Length: 56
Length: 540
Image (cartoon, rainbow over all chains, first blue to last red; front, top):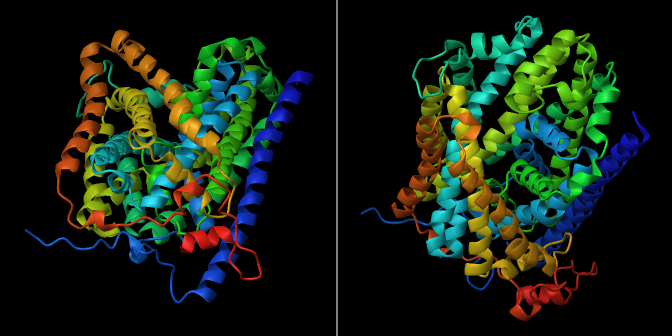
């Protein structure tokens, strides 16, 4: 392979696959925060949270 | 007249994914389809090679992921399939949702046929049944394609059987519902697909000539970046590949839990889809490099580098020349089958969910009635000697007119007519995740309609002025425009049909006061249990 093609391949892989890895890590972090919120809601509320019009 | 009942399809009784993981896999399964494997590598190669990846990434970040988030926010906020969600935004918008259902319906008709071909070739690959002349085998022996384009009813038994089988599997999975059917299927199929495809790519890059193929794929033609057509091709690739703007992601996100994260999920799905495309590009061009090496020609001289020709003519040729061809052939066509099947499930779920909600049907009933009806029409139309012609034209028109048109109208309706983008942005930000700023409203409300509007207008003008692929007009008009007309007919008829339950009593999740919209109010409360300002605003 030519040097240019290798550089483009590596950059593409870093940007796209790196983007995937970074977003998976963010999703895991946010998933934990969601669980934390839900656990707190379960502790604080009697049943699921409802808005003033009964929205669930 | 029967009394309307409160729907079991929203609120506490609505079906849900078992968790974020199941949803992410299903959404990736929907996005990763046949186009990732047979369209992206060829499009990239023809539009600047390595340089194409720049407009491709720009398109992903400025159009793909923003529309994905638009779909997610609509489905999750209004808790319904496309017609339900749009109706809950504004009653006249229901028709747009049904148009998206109509587009999905048309796509399922022919998409299943391609999956059936791939399933058949999985079996053929074990013995390399295609022999020396792969072109004659595919078009002649297997499809028994008629000499002239038309709509015939001469059935090809070798296509009929696998097509019927794929339909039985699809309807059975749909009948099990979202969690037990669609989610479980994706949890099994997607990791299997990734492992099989990785094995193929590893084999492909070690073949003689693979380096030349990768050179052709990655060597950048920087001059291409000044060509607007290359940028349009990049936006088109991202748009068609992500399964956006025709109801799939609206439907899928409506089954997410109330607190579920949306923005990080969108990033995972967007980058996951592109990751698979890049992998496919490496695998396909390594294999094409091997083929060129064996034939003693340059990559430029190869004819079938994308689409049906790549998968069912060029690849069998490559597999015949390759050491271990039967094994990798089975893996390749099984990958195509799984990639197609997971996308098909998502497209048919759009239709099934819409009918479930309109008529109060159970998943099983909807799968049997809708899936069964579509299966019969699909099997009759696409197991014939004219199937390839009808498929080719239907695919062209429904994508360039139906899917792109739906996206343009959706962004204009939601952004300009109904002015709901700020509300949807706030909904996205109302849960932990990457913060969505005002840039998102600019991209979705202005940038995307402009780019996609241009693609739509040029596409329609081209379809009206030049016969696509030299097909005769008396074939193109009834089949191509007929497919678009069918989607429009579904939209009109189903919008007029009355709902069997009270869809309009739904109240979306409460948002903070308008003065906080778009702000960073959505951060999680502090860990000591005292709710921070944002949470207090939500409770108010």
